[in-house]
Image (cartoon, rainbow, N blue to C red):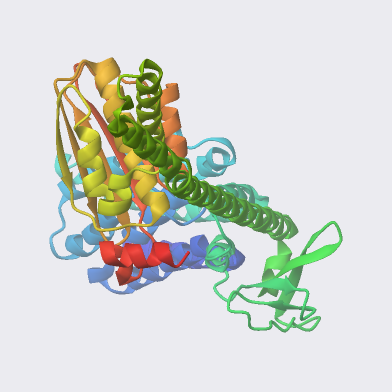
Length: 514
């Protein structure tokens, strides 16, 4: 009976120690809450036998996630979940084998977590590793005591109590020494480094500082005040109140402010580090936004250049067809009239007539290159089929798109022509397939051949195709394994278009309106 009374007194003392450690660590957020949960479940288990193992879940949770209180690996989450589950199951089915299995899982997970961490996180995780191993050791001893009937119940229970209380005290002291601060800042910097904008910054800082009431205000120069992510003005707390404000400046200029629980000021290193990390994150986000804006402006500029070139090519083709080509046709008609008048035997006249015909052919070829008639009159389907007929091998063509803007049609025809030309020149292909399809947002052109493969995406020919597609905001994907066959896929965004663009009639009315 004396032994039972001693164990109960020690149990209550351990619960008080753990609760005290949690209360002393309140400004450290999630870890402190886990300590309080361990202490609460421990005290409940001291009073009610059915709840005697409930503390094991939060205790394992504390050991495996210290000092941040968050699990970053799936298997750790599984082990923690198993500890919570076994804490309930063993109240009804106490099994030494389950206790032994849990001990081995916790030890393995703690060692693996420690080995995989580096820098400040490893330094901060060392106390948790020893605490977890100590906990696992007493669990193993307890399980073996039951399985092998060693009859050392009281020493094992006292050792268990000592390990739990000692772990709580050591971890609480370690938090006070600042390792938690270093690890938190290390995790926060890594977390903020992946941000491409400032959305979600408030939530990340709340988790890092353990203050769910924290707010981030951004300086709005037009209002001369701080505003939140929704543009609502933030009133700064008064001096000496429960809330405090930490300003974030850049070379004397206000950038943002953190409004948080005043208790955080007890760790100035943490608050200052978080403010610095937040300022860097905001600066990076603004730089990325500026880069995206400049890239967007550059892309639009390139598209305007391509469209201007296309308009100029159309103008040149129209002028040649209405000017030089018409004059050559008139000269040819005059020569035909002279020949019909009985001068057909004149050798010089015959030579002039032949030169005029060659000039007509050259001009026609040039005009077709500048602005293919098949593309103007029939769209991509007609133009690609016309292009396919000029190659020495069979080209299968399937085009399932209507009319598109001039620049996109020109870019896709150029892509198909150059891709098939490359296959004819370099791959030794015996056949080729061209497929063009579309959905509400993309036009996809695919050129496949059965050649030797091994095409180099960095070659000048494919780079030229890439550049041409990128002016339309498109992308080229090259698949060309050495064992044979090359697949070129062009994906070009399809702009919102009026219905009249999708028909030849609509295309004609748009051209006439220029």
